[in-house]
Image (cartoon, rainbow, N blue to C red):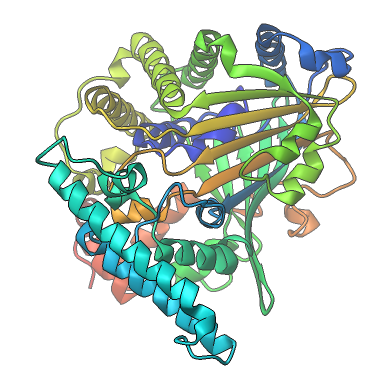
Length: 534
């Protein structure tokens, strides 16, 4: 089976729309979700920075297209940060006021109380009385600010009914958008989240991509490293595209399976792979290849339609001045670049591009295989799980394509207000013109809403750096696994399609866990085959 371009792997984790998540699930069965190898673009120097945006776009397009058939070793690092919230608060000069309460009519009193409480704390730390003459100026300032706020609020309230009433611009900006304004408590929560979760947490993946050999690997891992807590979890993944199989490390699922379903499992899954066959033979011949062609066609069409103004050359030194700052360890890997191309899209343009990609991809598949896009009979998600026909590759693809279509139609008719955020991509080349890394930055607060949860996410962002290098024959693909299980085979793997009937038979014989019996008795497909389990 052919392989796929790396762009899906890098971008899908950051697409919050359901249609993109659906596409990820759809393509996983036929495509490789990883990066691509570097490609030669010729010699460059500092003059390249001054080249036209049209040259940057064309250069990057050529590089990405050439990458599609190259082998490589890759390492991806994902960092989540939210320090922009309290950076904004620290740099607030008073021209943009923060909300102090949950309700606009309580703002002035709450702001006064918070300011006075802070002054009391300061006095206690200095072993003084807050009424001491030392604090006369600050107390007067707090009092005057309170009176000023009350007058401004009444003026703003009257302004709703009489446009001739004048309101101070800073207070009008505050009161008009009060529910969306940042609060001191929001800043404090952001600081705690950043210090106790986001900074100690990192997510990585590494592996190799060999399209000519029809295989790829991924070692996905998450690490949490605090002063008194160190933990890590890893999931090895092996993808065999010639046979259409994906292998997961069975050890990671053994305990849960043994506790809930298979109490006879023991150590049978120890040091074993779990084989998942993607195509059971029900999909049309050549479907996987057509998926890849449609994917590339949609990518090229959306890229060609992108405005030239989105692309430009930047210097390595300019990366350090980006705001919010890039994660330090990611920045250090990006700085030694001889040439960097930057692409910046407004989020609404990014959404439109993804919508166009989905439409082109869907249209090509539906035209080539109309039997896969027939309107399915109305059925609930739970009923589809119970129906044994839902587990064929063809029926699963049909349902996913239907979900993609529904999501596209929903987005076409739903007008969301999009915040003024950007999606930034950076591409770094070495002196030989080889692409050595790609970086993607996304803000998470992309829609304007007064929803509390969305407000708490304001300022959060994701930074992903993916680096490329030549494949080393000396290093193990999965450093955390024994040498004899680096490559899955019949002797070191469990075939899920063979294991499932064996487990059903186990329950038919009256065995199994209480949870397992409850689950299997809920499924009509089980009752048809083995009757009710006792």
